[in-house]
Length: 419
Ligand code: AMP
Image 1 (cartoon, protein in one colour):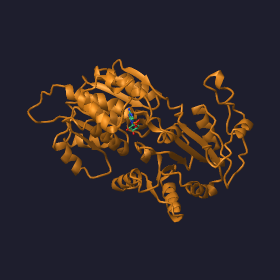
Image 2: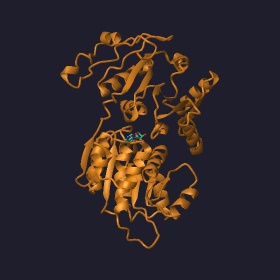
Image 3: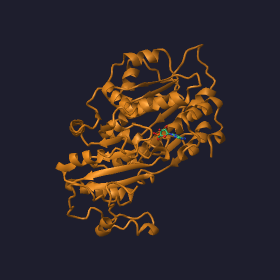
């Protein structure tokens, strides 16, 4: 299927061409027509699947086609997109700008942690599309800078993450302010019970689409795990990054303090790195992200929340310096690479204390992550870390064999991956 088959208007087709998009991704193939028809939509999709364009393209077209009945020249916020983090909100806004660049629609983004004055100025000049994090949005609604009564299109992106971050109460308050007659779209990588409840209360007979469920890591990503003692992780990281073929790498740290520490250590070793996490000011985060995107910084060290929404074209390497204790987070992390069908590599460092996390991750993704043994700091892990991985189907049983010895046999015997 091509974009031409999706009844898209010329200005959007032109913009997609300018972006270099030719084929809609699976979620886009299934979302664009129903959303253009005005249906509510529930997308179970993680980042990297093209989910932003899956709602941004049809929302832009619907806005373009709507007959505006407002007073001359005055714009009202007609589409509202809620996102859990500033990085994701900025990313979404960039997508709206890109896909809508040949249309006379205005969008802006608001988020907390920065002064509100430039955001208020942008709002006063009139916008059609508002992308917002819930807290700042409510704040500006209360200050009467934002009127939600003209909203016709409401999108909740990464709803599960909003829930995790304790934003559900704010989200509900926002929804109460938005007109009941509207089109609602909700995207979530996972569908815990609370999300299902939210879906039932705010979506009407939605079209449901699920692509690459969070438990199935994207096949184009090669994964590997290094067993290493905590104290040797820094040296192992430096060894890996000595490989010049790694043009850019995103390194994940569980804590902000850890991210700073890793960055300092890399800097000392002459490896150009910057950190991005919640304790940094918004401008410092944006600068670090831009430097990374432009290739000025080779290594970006991030915490999970700060990394949400980071979208770096062609990122080929993700390193989990710490394993996350929530297995879904692993899937989100490695989804930073291997985007839009590109190849990616994701390696993880696992110390003795993290083997339980590894076990949980492998159960979730129903895959055994090959062990990379050929490095300077090998360590024996005393217990099987893999147990009771239920294969997806019987034919997978062999390759997904759950015995420790088999896993050891499947260890990759090169420094990294077979080329
Ligand atoms: P998302 O899942 O929305 O974060 O998108 C992941 C990446 O895929 C972004 O870099 C998008 O610009 C890119 N992308 C989205 N749709 C397409 C498409 N149809 N063709 C090529 N790249 C795309």
